[in-house]
Length: 566
Image 1 (cartoon, rainbow, N blue to C red):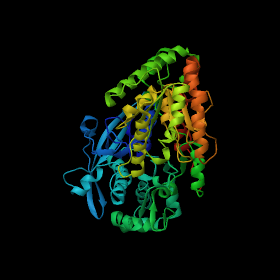
Image 2: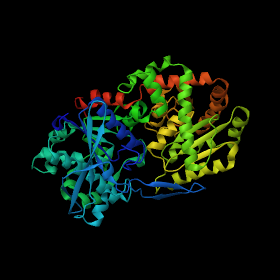
Image 3: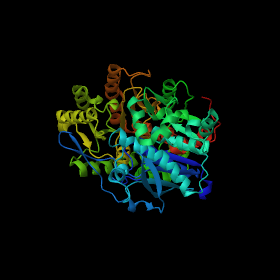
Image 4: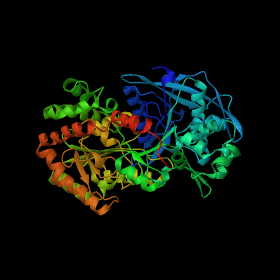
């Protein structure tokens, strides 16, 4: 595909492209990486834009009590990226900042998607500006706004400077890149000045932009004081946006900036789309449910199985529907290999040798309090009773807490406390420094995937989708994607009812009841019956909740959609 034919520019604050490239922190970045991989598979005319983080997010260290400390990862961008002979100048805080770029190639079945990483760690910049592409989600509001200006305004300038890109759609993955809309508006007004922009000018920008919102959590939407915006971006930009609906109570809301200037807006699951619509009543919000890249998240053992029995699945995940015809013995054999691979890594990292015959429950996601990592440990006696009377259990956990999120760090410590109380008879292992490589081992090697966020905080969630590709059923609260993927006893099991808000007492009772009376008895009493659930999990959820399907929906519904009314 020639450069000039690329018509979709995908902007994301983080990108999970390789486990050893610390340019991602968690689900948002991993989804972004899967999105670009699927675009390459489908030959979608896309280009990606992000920032180069020389200090990454952070390396997580956990002591014996679960106390988290952090260090900066060490990595060499030249191992993965190609430096480009390009220089831009972006004015921040009234001074010129030089911007360089690096190129990464995402290679798929049908094409290659170029991804550009902006870099300010250049000798001609002042130290404060060199540090701008240092840490992902680091620093204070000033640091974050400067980074977001670099991503949005600098990313647009880079695409223009490279030349040859005929961008018809700019896809903003969350509000971090929303300032690019002001760069587009400046192009539209053609010298008349941003403050002179008319409704027709706004509509012209809107025709170019698509916006995906990912979270109903208030803290997930960046806000910056107008005074700070003026200090960093100057009067020209600030005066132009001060009267727009993205500014209220003296603050710039980056989500509302993205919403205002987008022709198509979507949430990342059907339920999240409904919640986002209620949050933003002045806009039309659609939904495109997230997915995962099947080739990236399928374990070696299941790849071998699918290659042998479901040829064609690599190019088209719909072929996984035919898993219903596979012998359950083949499912169990592949899962046993994946489980051994996980346990070998658990032993290497922690020194704990888990029993492959014991039912293993996995939980691995960002350590945010609403995800309630410690919920299953609310009644340790109930767990001991299940372990003693129905069948033994063991847990494998992972997940990072943001360095400034003390409640999330306390959550990790509570899991460690539960592990200490349960002892060796009911092992609980918490693995440090969760990344893409460990995530793949976890999602494929456990027997059951546990997910119990506080509703309605889970916009989508993708870890259970990764598990499904490997035949691992979910036990999950009915939030995010799970109401779409849940068929009780077929693809997994629900925790609690279908109401919009969480009922903690009901959910905890349901969690223990499903384990005691349904799931653990099935696992030990009927291995073939449990394997049939695994098989249908692959056929129903593994085949559908992929980024191939997701990107086809973006192509048909978002990228080639007429503008929505506002």
